[in-house]
Image 1 (cartoon, rainbow, N blue to C red):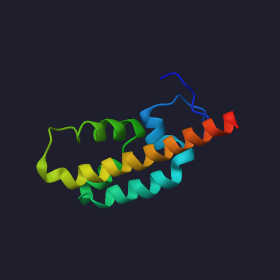
Image 2: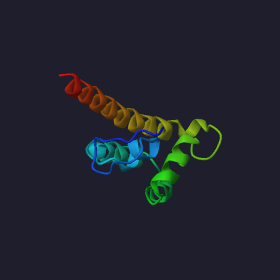
Image 3: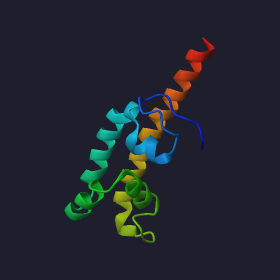
Image 4: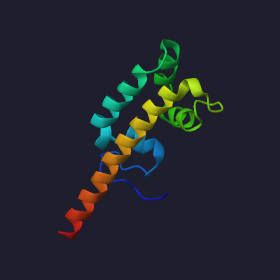
Length: 104
């Protein structure tokens, strides 16, 4: 997607990485939901994931933790799906509000 996202002060291309980890417009919901998701992980996995770059985090999460589906990880998957859902929901709300402001 070549569109520039203008809801934050970075004015970067609209991408999954930017939406989930870099956009200042979503920092409140991102930080809250990210910390909640991390609370579900074992210590070593939590430290490892939290120290990754934004791009590495996207790859790790969307690759089901760089492995095949593991039933025992379902709690972890759910926690990160919740993170993605809430950040995406905030983004969609911002888009709707921007659209309403433009047409008003």
